[in-house]
Image (cartoon, rainbow over all chains, first blue to last red; front, side, top):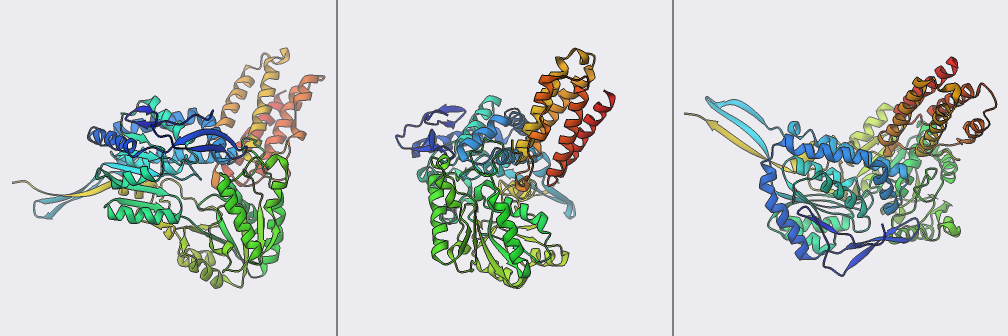
Length: 485
Length: 128
């Protein structure tokens, strides 16, 4: 990490980009430039497509059991290099080292799930659909898939997709986050070490030109995207125009409802994790706290007390509980939202901007835990995804009012309820129109055998990442009807 | 040191285990305790495995009111003034893991493992 320009990995080789356009990769805890991400050209992207196209048939005809052995090797390498990989992730993103370890654990879990492809990819059949005629379904790979990855989980999110894609017999092109590309570069170094056949998986750094080239190519099949809803909608539309399969995971505004019967002692640490984990830069992060009925005052005071205790600093320090925002732009955006909250009349009871008065935090992109009270549903901080460590509290009368507020928001990624009542919990999971529901869980993150769901403006497409959904996304069901004379 | 995260607890646990192992390894009174050294090696591996496998990001919660100072054994080892140093080390480690198990109760797998390790140290103390 010496400020070098990163290379693409195409057809089993590390190749320098010919572009003179780069983006600085910055350690957000120190402001130091640690690498430069090239904005690869159209021609370079086409080279990756050609490599993936050339290798497809040989890879597709490789038995599934042989394909997944590369995943076993990859998994073992991740375990062996776990500490180093976690540190690189913390350095490029700013998240705490524990958060990086957790991200890599989920990455490994996805690879483990994809190693069960010989079972997951099985079709089904029945004899005698008519006398002497049998019918079966075969799940076949389709060709070249690609991923446009986000900055907030730069190591893990790609693993919702690529292990399933290549395990089912497709070839793959990954465009990593240009803000946090180092973790994927490290993972591609592992691909190179384990000797995965050339062209099966390729890495192309870049921006819009690379993405457009991938979508417009007649040789590619589908896109997996995780990022903002604004960009996601554009890509969804474009993929439709070019006949691509697509799964778009967009933005979020996740409402966390706390009922009067909630166990506050257990709830408060969960809320801290939900709103402030990963410095609030999760698509599953708490976005608004809905305090129902007479728990409001106690909840507010307990939360304030807990939030004040959070330790902030460079993520490699084990004792730190919250790192910086991942970029200066992200930090400025959050600061702007905080200012908007103040201007729109919310009461700021914990002001995270104050940490920037401390000299040791000035070079990094730090904002401390922030809490707004007396927020109304129409305020900007109650509607927009802030993507930072900010808790807007809305006091509501009852569950119906809470659910109405949730449904009026265009996003539908996740929502959680804290309650001791099974009846209320069931009603919540039944009625609330979001993809991932947490019941006494502040971060409703599905494990790798379940789909990472999402609804409304938080997801466009029909098949999600992870597990069986991913297998279906990366395969086509071919029906064969057989009669022998 | 403030043990405010699972990572901080595990880092300190590894420091304790390493210091204690080195003490036994370099102390003539314990050279016959081969099984103890093997036990320490296994435990260090176990702790590293916990750090890799049980840091479940979505349920990591802050740890409050937990610091390393009451469990430090460095000075005890350096002084080594008493024949009971080994016993005191084991009892200190038992206390550390028992307290840690309570502090990380949000990760029940880790709690169980810390309870197991506390028991190992308790048994070691009884045999010294």
